[in-house]
Image (cartoon, rainbow, N blue to C red; front, side, top):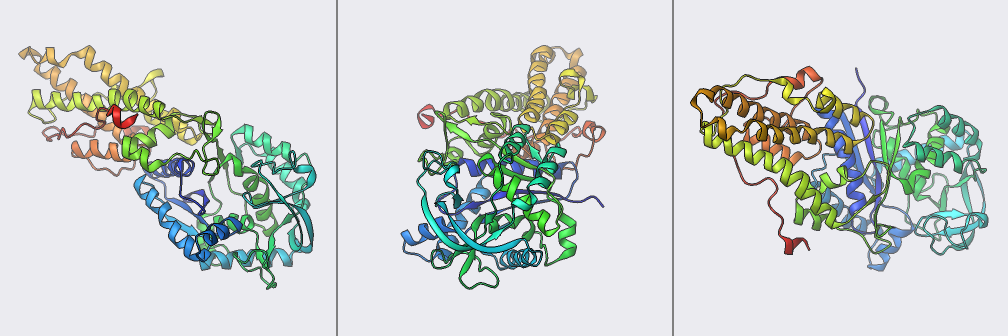
Length: 513
């Protein structure tokens, strides 16, 4: 049997409400998961929340709450956003789940048995926002090299994981694999980082300084470092060391989707952790870029976070999804502005897709009593540029993790359909009784074009695609495994078509500005 497609998001810290960066990661994963389901694959899509560590403890204490109470209140904020955005995840994991705690402690015991953990004194510079230790040489102008914020010097007894032992192996593994770290620029970035000797990883925090974490097995004085704890979710979520049959069904993960700012944890710490316990590597760690405004990363810490809920209220969920997927090539940074979102809404969605549906439905109402006429199906209408089937092109782009180009391939068919209307001029054909059959063929094949486009759009714009398919009296769940299956006619003569409201109404300028 074929292994299910297993895709993960990182776990999101619950010290603040979710923003556009969280939405982008989950929309990407949801789109890939929906596409895999569309082509007939079983999918396991996991997301969740990271709930331990200094930042959570501080955020909770600032509100006068226990950390677990605070986390329990924040988790619904993430689930509410995923529901709004149509994110169809299969499992939501929390690092406070008892099963996750069990697996973390099992991994630690295994590493201790193998001699890969030792106890020692750590003296270094600690960044609370990043929950990371740094040496003096790693600091940039005396500050954290990642977030550029203040650090504090600490000296304490802790447990350490022998990262350095596996450095040579990791370099060789990354160099030999063309798919493990994507895109290529991130692979080179990690290899550059690995030119310097790896420090062993401090994997605990003294309970006297931080009590909010998973208990370190065998020491009542320590809790597990939040990053070591969180990374293990990818195997604890599929029951590593708990249910061997389930774990073998899903592992290895096909894609770990992460932001580029946490790539080092996923491309250095995580593979070494897996190697040390004898677990197969995930197939791909895929790092997407940041969304920026005026050149600065959009983030809650910088105070320029973009609220996805407000944007969805203004433009609709599918327009928001479309903008994030279409505006930037996955892996690169994207410049966010509401003007760009409004422009995409108007040009691609309202003027192209929305207008195509309106014209086809209106002509069916006017010329064929709102029904699909008897017509001669012409599968070549689905051919886009280069005479390639859009299903084939979309499949290729999705396999290479390029949803922007996949959407462009689909939009080509929409452009061709709008052009066909101008070329064929159904309103002129309707005036000539001798061209009744040709009119029926033109309208029937235009309806087929938008029906096929809607099936392809289901992973990207599920709400809009579903609307069109329902108006054509077609199902909203499909399995299309190959080109031949995609090229089959979808419609039947005599079906009544529901025109419905505008798919993408004209924007209210006052509301948008």
